[in-house]
Image 1 (spheres, rainbow, N blue to C red):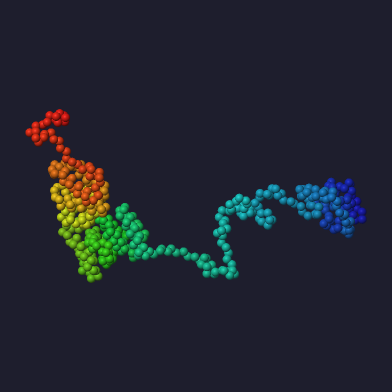
Image 2: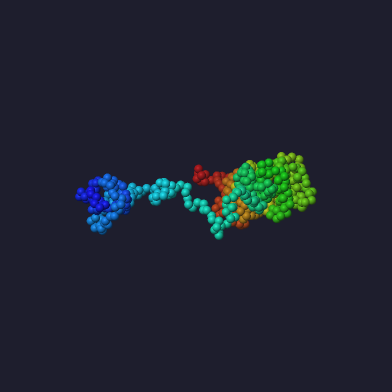
Length: 486
């Protein structure tokens, strides 16, 4: 290497001191320390040039390099690629560190150079990723701008100062009565007073407890004796748990005040209400003095009549124990003998009064639709024993009315007649003319209406007669007939 006029010439076959190929035949320094844009950097080539010999600081002039041809450009690119891999400077003197993109292709680290080297979006970024758990942009709180023309300061303060209070909706009296009626009708089906108490405990407010007695008794007015018995049991079981003595008395006061309107639908309401009041006194739900106030000026004649009925029941010599059966034992809970006896009394009363409406009401109060065949059987037996045409006419009219009003079903009617057919051999022992009377009664029923089927009329029994002795044979038995029968 020689120094000629402040220029550095490279010899030795165009090789640098470190053995690398030179880019140009001659390179010139335009700075004191060789740090110009066209100078070598402080890398390997710079170090070798510095050891070659001192450079005069005043000799800053250099010979401009001519344009590079295509062959040299290719060599420059090749050198740049090779130097970038080895970590040296490029030809222009700028850092030429290239990131290994193939290694970072699937990396989730920040690539903008300003991050802290953490994964993007907290590790929730990338293709086919659901997102970070709990990071939902839909429910992110938005910062409201006070300068926004639509900004509402009252709404802003209300959302930041929220106080939640429990609001229980207040039911009206009509809504409470409607719910009570539904509960009572369900109680008539299952008969569980504890379930009713639980339902009323969640429904009633303290000021509406008198509505329990009023609604329960009013619903029972439209039902049968068995449901009225359940109503009295319910009032007794609710006493002390849901309602108090004052609540029951207040409920009866409401009924006594509205008794005139109730009688439009239930004419016997004063009689029934008197029974309820007497039963409540016997069950120790209300004091006895409540029933003995029949002279109250705030009541009309119907209300006073109800209290008189209750006083009469409480003043009976048998005591209050008999009030446990004030509604009777309804339905199939009664013994069969008791039901049969009540049917017999019912038929006897009908034959004396000939009141069809009263007979129908009494049959409904029995509440034994599955046992109506016994009523038909007893009526036919009574007809056979009477041996009277007026009795036959009355019983036939009763059967026709019971069939037309659907009180007795055709199945129960036919079953009652067939029971008589089956017992005719025993009945004829007590009633010798039973066959002829039955034949005449069935023909009358057939003419009165079509409540007897053709099969039932066809199967009417007849008394068989085997004649072995003719009236003109002198009491002698015919040998032919005897041998034929033998």
